[in-house]
Length: 429
Image 1 (cartoon, rainbow, N blue to C red):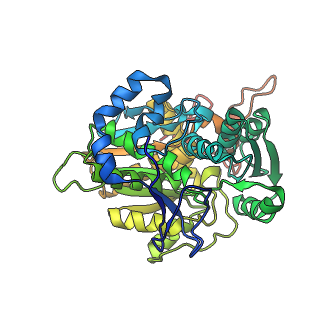
Image 2 (image 1 turned 90 degrees about the vertical axis):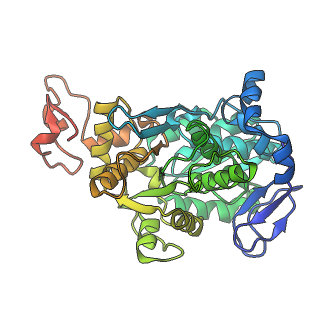
């Protein structure tokens, strides 16, 4: 595992030492990237090392197979990473990266594994996070594994599984009447007095390092070639930012095989229409988003009114020739049920936003069925059982009732069109 050469500000390119704990750039508040001595890595790290390392040690499985391009520290690991890339049963060039296979059931395990690893490396004792839900569960798990105190702040209406995780793992959980932005404000106001280290998205450098392993994996699993497009559900957008960093590193290391001009994939960021600040900024040609008022969607991971890395997200999407799209909850639910019935995969609402985007871009002709595409399902649908059931207006039948009437209504209490109904349960178009 390499030593960190320095930390670099994404805005002003200032360099900082990684010898001690760092948060944001002290000059401009920019996000800090971990940088390595790439010339030395080209000599010491190779693609072949990855398979050899994974075969040699159980601690080098999962995302730690990429230890050669991660910071030098003893991992806090629960087996995260190297998730399956599943070919669609209907679309031969469409692959779904199944992040539900991670510990705690979502992609958040990657970033929090790396961040907690470095927190333990630096001797931090108390970590705090504002979360829309899944990051909270992941922090609680990895903090428990590391013996570090965790303080979690979540909106009161998060999926029950997220609250359950935090309590079960022994974290200090506070439910907040508000959104993730309100949770972030509380952490910011109290962290100094409480002695917490704020491990929020992009407020420290290492969650990006964990998330970048998604980029390494999708390229390795694609035969060390880029796909034509990557669809990524985007709340905070750390995974999209991390993958773009991974592509940059792989090119410097010579790990990506040339395919024409070796063009990076088009990055398609997907949001929910009830909270779409980045999509709005993209359409308007803005370099940053504005705070989204009255954010509301059952895809709780997309309910981020203003992501801290919005400028980075917009820049990456534009560099790649990609798009930022948004879809309403009805479209997301329809795609979720479609993939459950026709592919045998119970997606998270965030993942279903991405599959809805794929259908839209194939239908519009922006993408061709011949294009190789990777869609990220960022979490397990079962973690959202209560909110998905509410969106379907579905409940366990009471004695003497079949449940047919309840199941044939949508979440607004309106009867669904006939094409959505079969045998008393909702079916996709």
